[in-house]
Length: 427
Image (cartoon, rainbow, N blue to C red; front, side, top):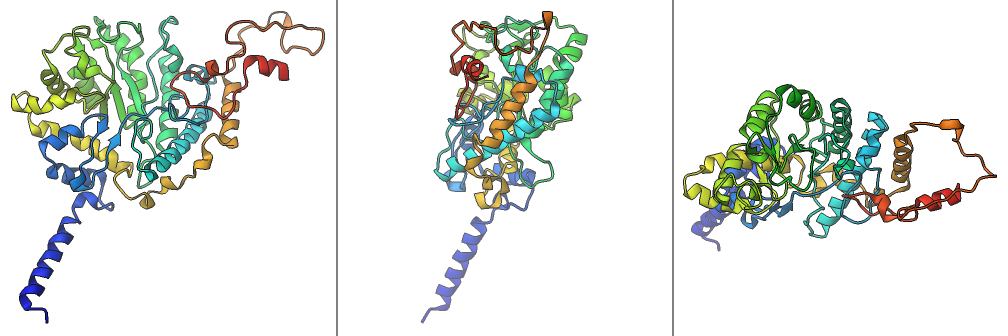
């Protein structure tokens, strides 16, 4: 016979177990904000720091999985194998077609979700497998010699804004769902349009306020206030003497103050280290000082390892644990909003089948966008369209029959590629 004491102890143990398994952060009916608030209270300082870098460590005692924040979707899901490859952004911008761009990135978001669900089912949480896509690039192409101009939507602030908002809305999905589909990222904030070789030490200084507000900032503002973009990436360069990722003017006064931005700010990869590196800005003495300054300026996530020094920053009194909590809550809120912390069967986006990746439907969208991107500047002597017969066409140059060249950068791998030579031969 079971004694009353045994029954009491069993009941007490059961109650404790149930209490431990029903923390608010595990309750998917609560808001991401409420869940983040609860989880932060349960973390040690060491655990908090490990959650503030792009390779976010697991907290097994609380059931928190590892997560890698870095994923790419510049013109298709990037660097993760098979994917539909759309034209580079500079080409898509030439379409001047927001609706077509939205459709393209809605397809990209389907592929990203399908890939993520597959990887998660395999227990894989590597780089380029997550739900936080570090795109679009809404810096302006002010000088055609900038080699990364192909990643932008051109030189016009208005066009960059319109195209960028379409990308964000296509990626993030409808706002009335319980979970966000993906989180897009407006980058690189701000005054960052090349040159590339000295971006880790360059100081953008004496920027005319009118140029700042009418040229460099409008696209970012549109993505925040119209697109509700969930991430903003601060740039490598300095702005008026301060590293962008430590710029109170850019991040606290303009972004969070004037525009009311509530989301995550992520540092470009290695940007915090640039604060103190010899070949960087040399504005801060070491990683502890740089990391504290970045977090206090509103940079929540370090793509790198400098934030490991936040333990020392707190120890030295450079920043308080409560200040870290502000950034950490934003990061956790983002993960809860994506459903990344919850069982897959609760998140409708995980039901998107892997068969959508590089599907015929998406291939047709990419072809349509390529056609829309083509721009005829002149047609002297009515040379075009070419007439069949009576012509010999010479196709020359190293890229004439190069398929990889057509994939662009930050790209996925298409199911098939038609080279320029092959296209002309088949015409």
